[in-house]
Image 1: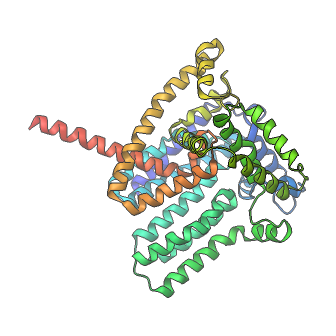
Image 2: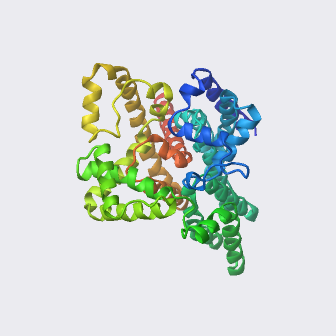
Length: 441
């Protein structure tokens, strides 16, 4: 208990100090997606008294907007207080990561807790008005409950809490919706390993499915009935067409982002164009995107996905910080390739400060890459089943993210990255300790 409180206190102190050094003027700080969440929450998006159109709300899930609408009401829309409360929530997530590590292997839990408390990804994201912090908290609750079900016998209630938090995480962000279905074989395997009877296994799986589905059931059934769609949102089409496809074409056709977007739009127009009906348009964009993907070589597709997955894992989140983003720098998404972007950093004077930050970030990236690789080796060696589940989670989120590059896309599996780093650090300290003792004996 005392270590959990220590992790929480340290995590909150780091996040609170970070907030003190931010310019939290709403007009300057709330930009891009943050502005979308902030303004729609102020307009009571997804609430019964809200007056926003259904088409505008079809691309997102209600959870994040309810969360920020409540905080805006509670604090009278005071941005500093809202981010302070969000930092408290993120500090709770750090404790959950600490507890998760302890369930898998006690000797790594303190390392995991301290890594989580100081995680640049979590610190930066918790200082932004986005869905990541509330989503990560709910997903971490689900992972913790799953691990309790696996490691603590007769903890069937943990399974149902796992289902509930998984469903709530899907209510926050639709990317977790397929995990409700994909989790069922894992739950079945765990019940078999725990020597549950067939009836009890079926009961557990059935109740898990119903509980997980409950938070999103109203949205899902309405979409099936009224929009003829089995998706929770209409965002899949625009994500694939306007983000995944440009990432692929930058590799296969050496196109920059604007050229790729024009190409995608021309293909959509050739297919009959968009209708203005969000779910139907999503299907049209998905079909056009599938056609474009089918025209690419497997080599280019594999490279595009692998490159983005690796870069998202090793790229330091400091690049997402508003203070860094406000420095003059070339747009990565607008560049044709990495080399063009690097040349712009090296040879344009106005990009000098950003280049220095990037150099420091490169050192951090090497550390992340090494700890991830070394940690993976020992994780697989020590705990094959849990490591398989962990890497399936990483694979899933990397797959649906596609060839889109940003450190924020690794946020859902930050707890796994932190655990791998904890393994590496513990092994390193042990190596130094034994080498030191052997020299002195």
